[in-house]
Length: 361
Ligand code: SF4
Image 1 (cartoon, rainbow, N blue to C red):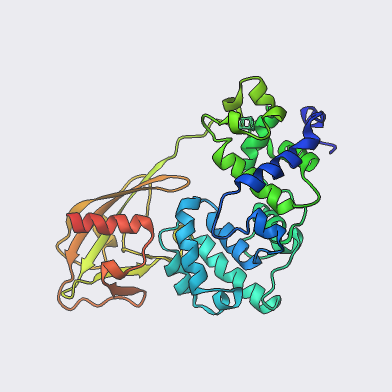
Image 2: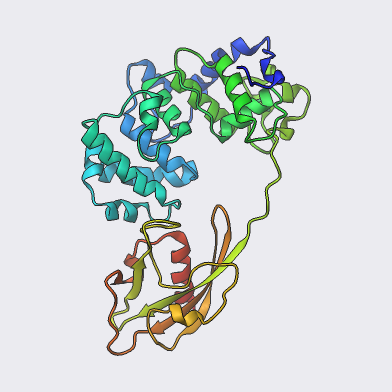
């Protein structure tokens, strides 16, 4: 703890009771989630399936519980264990992932399944260190799987937990620098037993009670321990550094259709945004649309602008001009292009919006 800020070294007198109070609250109020083994079932000996915990944690990175829940069930029904997923073609995983965003996760999901199936005989390692060595598993996910699936005393820190702890201790350091201090605080209160339940209890508390706006402190089991609540400064925490405004990029896409009502799609390059996903052919996405956009069209056709598709990615806003046209006689697609009926194509959200702009236009 050499480099820990001095405020983090002051141990709250009530800190020892946080874990007991929180676990008792979790026993009564745990959310029922499809990937979760609740506290009652756990007490009666049921153990979480590490494959299910891993799958849910990867899906939940950057995506909400409400969106993930039905999609998780589809994944689990299609690939009930890690060996089944490892044996599936990557294209099937990418197709099933369509619409969930952050497609590198889907590629890593497959890579990780292959490594676990081939190098670990289908059994997930049970320590943070070994989990961390797997593709697509970073510090947070390794700790979450170690705690939730294996009850290891691994310190889990997600956005919900950051918020709760920042408020409990009025941590004045802005995020992300505050993570170190948050970890020190969690080290103090993290129980040796029921580590997974404690992690999930903190996450549930942050998601349902200690919300970003208007936290429900009257219902909070740890309000007695909460410095921000006592000072009526709950919403001042966590402290964040002001974000820069997102830049906007622009581009154009071309929806070429044939006599069968199919549309021409091509697979995007493996590396980069939406890597490996299907999309409409088009220009690069840049600050300005300079030059002749039709040079990026898949054919010389009578292109009509039918509308725009807008989408916000993590680091920028995107506006695409959408053009539609009929395939000219004798048009031949290239090997990376496919004719697919638009309602049958597994597309990322931005491309779905572009296809919709064609249908509306
Ligand atoms: S008392 Fe309020 S601010 Fe403090 S942890 Fe509970 S809900 Fe969050």
